[in-house]
Image 1 (tube, rainbow, N blue to C red):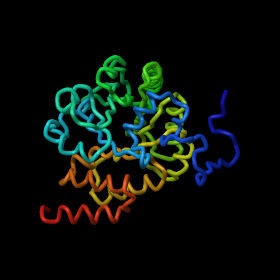
Image 2 (cartoon, rainbow, N blue to C red):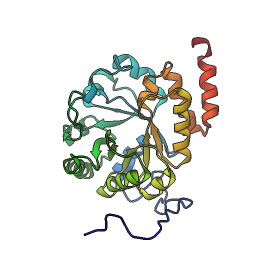
Image 3 (tube, helix red, strand yellow):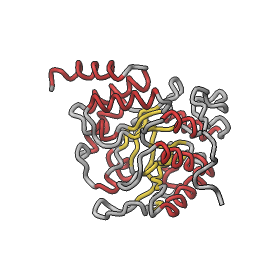
Image 4 (cartoon, rainbow, N blue to C red):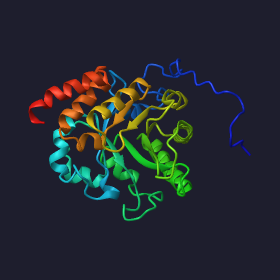
Length: 295
């Protein structure tokens, strides 16, 4: 049996060295994938920067109507021009998102209990691969619980989606779930992100933590960092800057955009950090200037 504590030597993540199998493709770990996978990944990660701004509004699948997302049909068209990828359920996409929008699509394919149930860790695969194909999804998002009661069924869900994705050249986005009782340490995120990547995910969505550069170095696929709970705009932009500087391939700023007082300008400020090389101070100064007469 494997040693739960790992090999008893100091670990060296070589954080200063770039990923060795990059080749000429702009997405980490994707150099050996087939053309179809690469085409989808190029709709997610900008070929010029290798990065992405995701906008998740899939919260309704377990929370119902969410503050800031009461009217998806009004919110999404305003924000879509300023983000690269829309992450949503098939119901929200079909009813509220114009098919004419050019954004990449991250389709939520797992579902589970609502907020009325304390245990959210037991999800099922709710969307078949045929529907992901019909919707021209660029990746399929799977909530994955590592270290929770539902870990085994969660990994089974992930494996099924990854296998189907490989058959039809659609990438899988593994979303690291963090429950109330789970530690948010670099040790946990190194474990969780690496498991998801080794299962075959082409993208992993996770959270920022201490020693983040080591988490990035140890994961052979790109990490997209969730913004998490709503933060003051200045703090959210600092988070975005730190994760990009730490090696993340993108951010997913759902609540920190749609619950902002000025969501469009907030999305633009995040984009400046991710794609234009702005610092958090520069992005926040721009945000304040653009919204000064409306505060």
